[in-house]
Length: 92
Image (cartoon, rainbow, N blue to C red; front, side, top):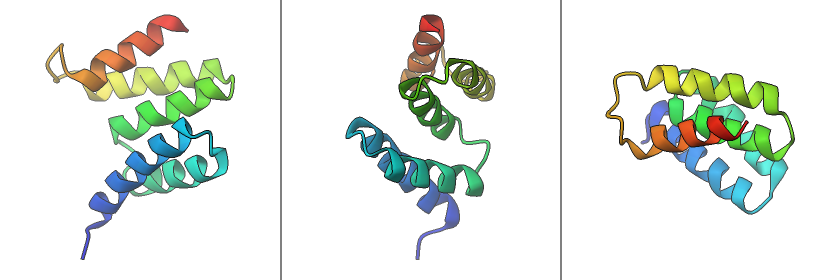
């Protein structure tokens, strides 16, 4: 049986895939479910920010990316998801 955190991790990955496929409602359901279980999941916040950017919500996307980056403060500078979050933030 999967733990709630394991399920949340799968929801984030599914949300990212749904976002890439432009399945907005399915993306939203998955990312909301993941963040409900684990609100401090930086990867979930990164995926949420991508959805916010896709929806034209630049202000909330900036805040979400800043939150994700804050969570990753102790991560290596070359951590791929941190690099991606910083790059996205730089475009806003």
